[in-house]
Length: 403
Image 1 (cartoon, rainbow, N blue to C red):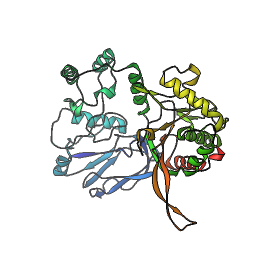
Image 2 (image 1 turned 90 degrees about the vertical axis):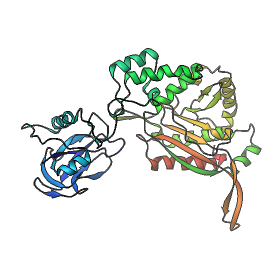
Image 3 (image 1 turned 30 degrees about the horizontal axis):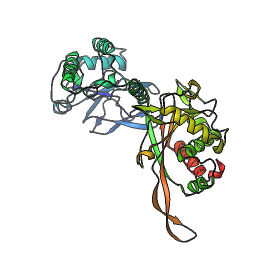
Image 4 (image 1 turned 45 degrees about the horizontal axis):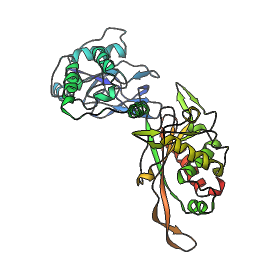
């Protein structure tokens, strides 16, 4: 009777391992398909692992309280040949050596399935954090890496290549064929700024980025701007509001390095400026210590220098967050990406007239409002904290006299 491995599944996109909390069944017990058999705990939740099919529990290879990585063999289930074939797991029964652990059994399972070709799903236990039954693991061979380094390419550049290797892997032959085919297309040289932006975004996207949004009424801001001298723009007001909110609690702007959160030493906020073939991010230092009125000329000067690509060295880099006004392009909603060294980016959409309920009049009245979005590194900040930070920014924009 075939033995089917009970494999630690991928329990979440960022989950690499889970601890065994409880064995819900014992060796010798009969189980049904999708019956919960093992209770595990990740760093986020407690959940159950279900049986892949009907059968009898042969053995468990795990210890309570111990953590096991995704893809580990937790035990074996004796199942019918029909179920094993249907799952693509019709491996020959074997008896692991005494004292064997989950890792060695995982390797046995991987080897026993190697070289087989069938319509069913094959387990692909090849490292972390790869789902146990996923096709492909993003593996790049040393030869491929050397060739990519020679051409100055990154793994992201292979996203459009269909691989013909095992589990969809891109082979060196696939790669060379793709590169040769590029000559059939119109090509243009990317500018140094475009390459720099691409590299920054590639590094930023290695983190789990999440987004929250909120509509804010801009009527108080526009009314304040009519009487203010000099007149601040909406993006500068948003920058100042974010600086004040982070001055009250700078933890959301911290960076995760290993198992430490590095808190910012000063509230230095950048803002995006579109330049020729790219984006530059000038930085206003200590934006929480200078009033909105004092920042207007500084902001305008930095915008002009950025457009001319003449920013001084002390006005770039080292910021803890960025503000971007995508409303200047007529966009009402967007989800910008934080720079690699930052955790946060605040976006502001185009102002539009929208109905707003007026309690005093007991009716809807038209007001100008805009969407605010906050994109953040989900490793450092959760949705609740991001929502509270965005709500505080919106509250400050609704009372521009506080800026």
